Image (cartoon, rainbow, N blue to C red; front, side):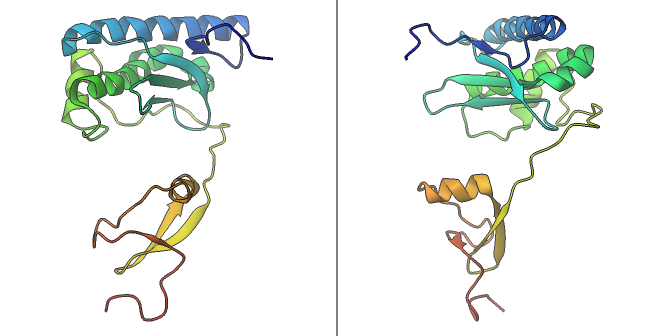
Length: 191
């Protein structure tokens, strides 16, 4: 049976009282920074979808789909453990990724000078990684798949392997050749 209601811009997997309040504070901080960022980049920033479903060791993630719609995902466990620092560092970090995309497009380095400039403008330290206590949190282990090119062997994660199966193409940064599945055939490597 189809649900006729529009999807909520915020999804929470654990809706206990304290978690729901922390999610509300993170959502409020996110939207305040998006509004501030709109003025910084000189154009309106549509509200991103916000979810609290990220797991493992990552504190946050910003993704922009092919149509330009953004989703900011937060790790609810890390938010619960480190809320003040999470709101001060992780939330601006992910919002800065979104604003950098809106201002500069996809062709910038994720933590490059454009992102750093926006982090400074949002009043946050442009750190690439968090230093939260992650003890007890499990991280997903990705299987590696063997690929090769004319200059060597590569181990691609399951994510990239499945993208290739769906038609994506990856090339070696060294020789520029498309990566092929499996190890190199005997005598196929350069000396």
